[in-house]
Image (cartoon, helix red, strand yellow):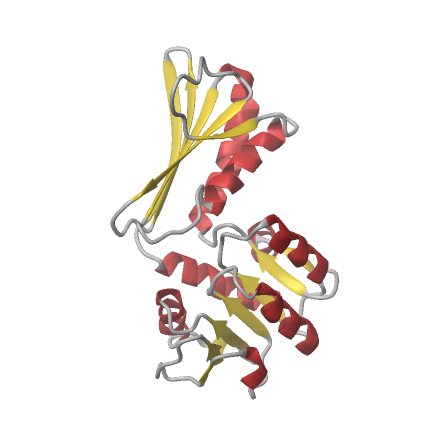
Length: 253
């Protein structure tokens, strides 16, 4: 039986990528969409979840951090899993997600790309080997329409590194003025915005007379759509809780 998906943000660019992939998928289907600006995309599209008539298994949410409670409450009330594929969540949003995860299966990761999640493991391993002998700087580059900075993925990478140091590292967003010499407890975070850059992340470990860089570059948004569909299939029928890419990969392997 196919995994039945409600696609939130259906009429946006990411919604289009998901629908394009689902058209060739034998194991999943979009039964309807939700979008504030509905248009003809080949499936029913509603302005709100309250209008939905179709039965489904999972919600894929590529909209925004706004109106998060509506989506979570709908998933809870219908017993659906939900893949939160947007970024820019506030601390209050994250607390709300944790609360709903007690009763709802929620898949949330800062980045749905398989490559980025491999990068996350690599930078953590590098930090374990290099320790405090190397300074860590993270540079992320995105298109000129991205609203949040630093990116959720940059923060995810920083958090993975900081686990090695028991959370003692402080995140410094850029540098300006007479900031003084760099301290050992910093992780520098730098955001670049321009053009149509899909997403690039670079973690630099700078030591004495040598530099190690680990980078990932997304060349199209399609990689995130692929990850979202994989997450939706994984989430179908799962018990309430928080899930992320490492859980998906562990099950697939």
